[in-house]
Length: 442
Image 1 (cartoon, one colour):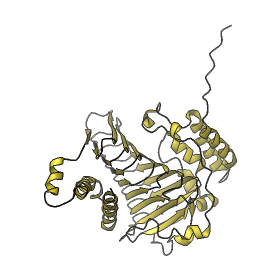
Image 2 (cartoon, helix red, strand yellow):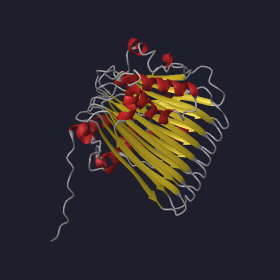
Image 3 (cartoon, helix red, strand yellow):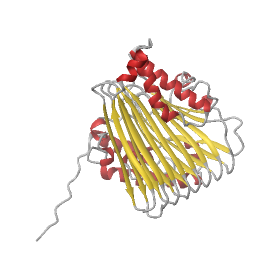
Image 4 (cartoon, rainbow, N blue to C red):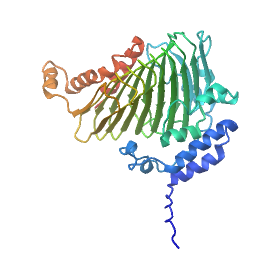
């Protein structure tokens, strides 16, 4: 009698066992409808487990090997600890509307939700879920088709975040800043935000992540964005995590016809940082500009993974990622542009550049194109190199020290990522952050 060979059972890591234990106690949070979504997400995660080097999208960031243990879910911060964070993530010169989260919990007393502009609604995710907001639950986890274990984990465990909606044809001039401060306790934070920009509306969104320089903690954050027809969003994400922090974030965006997205990510600290983006241009003449910059030192590791999908005719995308690396830091860029068979007249360009300031630094760049249409303009490329010594010598010959000369050149190198930011005060604040980081080099 013949028997089919048994399917080998994958041995769970200690971290995966702990995640299953935590989920068993949390899966019913948020009511029956959300519990169904959570369970489906955790089942999807369980099929593969933590991503590792055998997963092509994670080959340079082996989370199964790196995540040895799982910190407990964060407890609500003490009131004194929360109020000590009042000045966290303040961007000089930027008059933003700040929505503050400390250790994964919304802090109303530190947030500015008074006198909201007409057409703007802001609510914490926990509040929206507690009220059974059908519009929110209908979109959570469904903005894009994302088959990724880190995103599945976020869906299974999501606890707090924000729900933002901008009404049709409204223009919100004041930037909305989501401030996430962590590290007061060794914990794991699952943060989820949903942003809907209705037809013809526009807004600026800033997400800033800051943490303790000594505490070990883990952040899994996700933001889903829906841009309806003719909508526009400028989004900026700033990561200044603690020296021992692990930060994984997922950005999912869906663009309708004539929608415009400008997305900029700036990594300025953290032991391990991974920003993965899934952007789908669903409508004709949609436009997406995705840019990122890493300034890394010591043994910091930053991974930018981008998937840009063109589904409709005459859509346009631009992707530019730059890294400045010293000591034994590592940067990863993986980018894929997929042009579907119905996306004729697509114009898509992708470039990754890395600047190595030490022999121990390492950059891995892997841009890709996958095209199923025959009338398109697409290009991709990557470069890795050191500073031009002739330019360094030119500046030093004029009395500028080597460190300052290198800082000036690297600022100019990173400037191509920041300069297109439309909001002037935000652009200047980002430039100041870059300058401070570069001039802190020894």
